[in-house]
Image 1 (cartoon, helix red, strand yellow):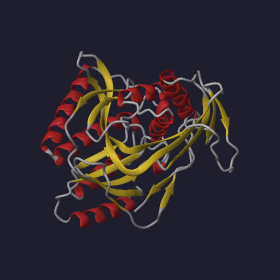
Image 2: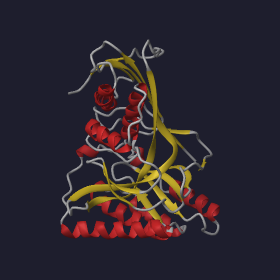
Image 3: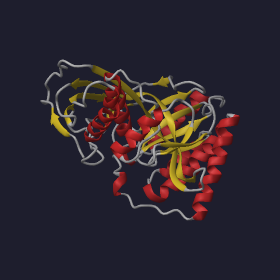
Image 4: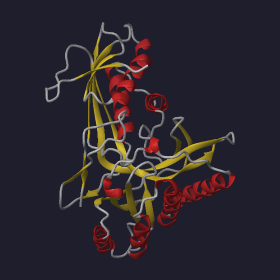
Length: 354
């Protein structure tokens, strides 16, 4: 059941009324390194993915409880965040039984700067930030597995943004970890770009893929190689896995720029390419120890622009910590103008550009 959402007045200043206010945050990501169908511990097939961490962009939420109001009566700012509203109602139902008051409605405010429809986890980031804000309003911190369960119920599938830095193979439709691949991804420098002129991808409109035994075996081989890359810190092997996964994703997404992307990666000595399997964001992966790295990155950016592939950002993902370093220059923003579908619209968000 969808909660009764009352929109805020456009342009009006949001002011929380009486009640306990909680806050929550969640990061985004830069698409996937690996995505496909894998076998769980019981030998059952399930969809899974490994995301590439991204510094900076994320979602923030504030939730103020309104004791005495119906639990599904929510005032949401902005009013179009329907999945986040569902997450709020589900989290109230999760947290309220542990307190000496009945479930109630409230006011929810969401803000974020993750571009929409590019496969960067904007929807999941909103949902997780909201779950954390509602839990905080009850003085509670929910464990990651509970947040994952609520996120899947709110949006049918979610990214593993509720987890720590460890790279995991995550079953996005079930909200569970299939495997912890190691302590941290090998450190990489990523030249980010957007394909398809940055147009959002409506993943629900894409045909459903079927995977035969051969495809599952191929994904399992990539899983083994990625595990090895993580354990040994092998950036070249990481790039090989990401490129193979991206190429398989092309069977569905069919980005016309894909061959140009792999050609540029080869010309400038990148370890490989990664593409969001549910969007248009992509990246060229470089080993930080590559000789002449800055020169290669500058050449890579020029080559991308020459082929009308907008470069968006260059960032690094240090091993063993949250990715924090990001390099920016030139125009400040690119904007996303279209939501992915009526159920998941968001206010246009800037993409930091080179």
